Amino acid sequence: MKLRQAALKSARERWADYILFVDSDNLLTNPRVLNLMMAENLTLVAPMLESRSLYSNFWCGITPQGYYKRTPDYQPIREWKRLGCFPVPMVHSTFLIDLRREASRDLTFYPPHPDYSWAFDDIMVLAFSARQAGVQMHVCNREHYGFLPVPLKAQQNVEDESESFIHTITEALIDHDIEPSEHFYSPPSPDDTISFDEILLINLKRRLDRRTRMLKTMASLGLHATLIDAVDGKALNTSQLQTLGIEMMPGYKDPYSGRILTRGEIGCFLSHHSIWTRVLEHGLQKVLVLEDDVRFEPRFKRRFQAIMDDIDKAQLDWDLIYVGRKRMQVQQPEQSVDGVNNLVKADYSYWTLGYALSQQGARKLLAAEPLTRMMPVDEFLPIMFNKHPNVEYMSHFEPRDLKAFSVEPLLIYPTHYTGEPGYISDTETSTIWDNEAVATDWDRQHDRKTAQQGRIRPVAQNSVTGDSPPPAARASRDEL
Image: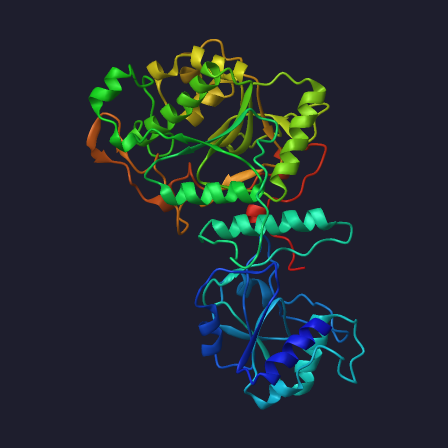
């Protein structure tokens, strides 16, 4: 409170027109934010900041004692269902004060107003001061301005705060190319691979934006990735496919669109196939495979390390562990794993966003010779652990004894879903494998395969021991 008051006093003494307060863990990603807030022509205004939940830097209701009060106005503003600049009883963390206005002279953080009798808290003191001075606070959500972390709980510590801020950085990096301040020294992050021989990041050379974001994200997480150049399906021609000995799975059609395999899907399969080959050729015992369009859950590194430690202690025999996926069997819960927290036996699943693979698992996948009966890689994997609903497809592969598991809750999600701004699919948006003239860029908003996981009924919810926080990627927790 005293520091904020000192800053306010200094700005007034310098005859500043404005003062912008920004908490050190807030990330302003809109370069026009200052001009936009000044253009609102208001005495005290805040740009609405985003977090992994409904939490933001404003309240829509306040009790007579100065505490938060839930109102129906909050969520429509926070979710951009109502756009504009709205009068609110509280803004905090990041806000702009117009010091040219006479009413701003009575705004104060310390000492509190003589009539103040609420809790000794800087944001509550300022809100009371604004009310007494006749200054209406406003929050604006006309654009996206930046991010802030969710407040810690009472039992959390400094390490939790650090991880929360790191997660805020990784979320901001999804749509913004941000850099650390040149005025702040940040020690180099350790090149950790958790407990894997390698973390392998699949990326198309022409997707420099995704490569840059993922490398920055992983550096923020303290993880070292080995880049694997993806096979560009769009660059494949028919003669190359014949040279590679690629033949399609007889009778395969996409379950949603009815189309046959795309060149993008072939490129995706070949990219993963090259990793399975690398595991054997380099004698790697276990690797973590990541695609370049993923977002990480809070405390990803610590949580995943704990799962792998439990697996080692339990001496679990495993071939593949999904870290991110779309669960397709949603009629009944998957079986939890005794002695290992946050792990289930995987049932029919889509996506290859991220998975751990053992040398034994790579050997089984290659031994199946899938290039001679090719289908999308995320259809092939469930066949190999005997969980695909299409018995005809499964009959082409023996044995189907891949030992597959999944972390629960998931630790990786897609950065974007079908129909969302920024969604791009190099596998779905392509041409069919045997005719370059037939494009497959159908209506993205109706592509169910790449749509977000639907609601799973309570009766089919997985039950595991261990830490099970709600997924940050689509959390719907309270504002506070």
